[in-house]
Image (cartoon, rainbow, N blue to C red; front, side):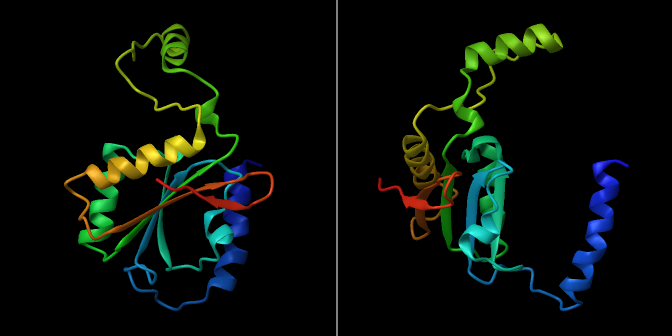
Length: 165
């Protein structure tokens, strides 16, 4: 049996707990969280969020990219969010490689030249949060009155630490 088949079975139990209440399309807290795709980070549980509370936007490294900004603009302008939290974490996979090495690996393994692609690796997790907060503040698509905060989640303890600019 595949994992997908197990997921479908588990979903039935979830449906039974979920109920049939229709949640509004706009997040209750008016918060969007930019974070990593890491499987050790259960954002809703770590922040005490319930269904319908916040937008949780994820990608490798939790980095602010053009597509992340696209999603944030929709989140704000169409769905009413007014706050952004940048949440990176310790022991991130984006800390394990350099662009040059990774692009060479992809060229060798896949035969694809991606030498112009930035996979946004980093070495200092707090600095990566600061960089992404700065990118959001500099974007003309993010209004100046949107509150932007940052933190680092420790994957070993679950504790979050505020990152000051």
